[in-house]
Figure 1 (cartoon, rainbow, N blue to C red):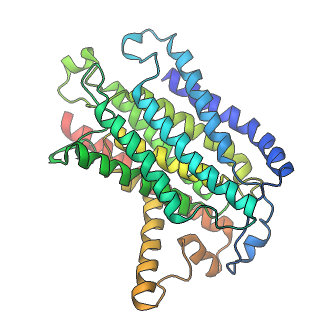
Figure 2: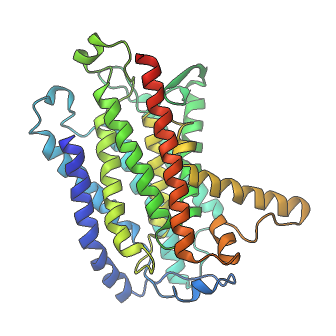
Length: 367
């Protein structure tokens, strides 16, 4: 637990104090977020606010991960504490950084072209798919000393579902889908000050708890496994907990400056990176289907966006005033702060239900 706490605290401090530096730098570079004219009065006051703030919490997470490994060297149970960086860390941090890089290119194009278009939707999807496929192959084929891979050939809920074996090729396809879907889900949610940052913090905090719980009940821990039949067949759960906690801490530090009225936006570099990391955490912890509940707010916003698109293209009618969903409530007269707080509440309830399902599975097994 010490290493997890160290990672979270270091990430929070770095993000908290580095974000105002980024605000000054991006403002000086005139890297303001282009705002679309979509009939929302709240958008007008955001013109010129610097974007690409996601760079800060990505850097903070990487630095905190290193600090967490320094903390591991002081642990008495180093034989199972994973002192060296692992393949799990490579996959999770690689997804975070490289999908963030796709978002960075998108943000950079928006700033240079002075419009809100950036990369085309196909361009972003292609970039996400290539990155997802590359790390999906690594996650399926790199086997650890205890015989575990980062991902699994089975579809998982709270653990692998034994009868849902999709094979290695199918698993890579599922991996790409999860990363792409979650990445775009967070990106769609990123439309109001602090909304995506706060919701991501809750989800990442949940995965920090799940990762640490799996570490304390890990099949690779011979002492625990010999005394208990119920253990988790995952790879490097302490790494998972440390990375999730570091990213959560970094988001909290960033939220200090990103909450309404935001002085900086995370941009696509932050949204795409966070979504890819959350998708990777879901696969690595064997909670792929459970992530639909844990990341319930992202799912709701994504599915309502799909409903709107399908309805408009097939019938010419809109189900909602505007999508993503938070803009529907803006047009209904809700204030931005009210929408953000209420959506955070929805995200928190979804996280609580997801953690409850995870823990109830453990209780039913050991009881």
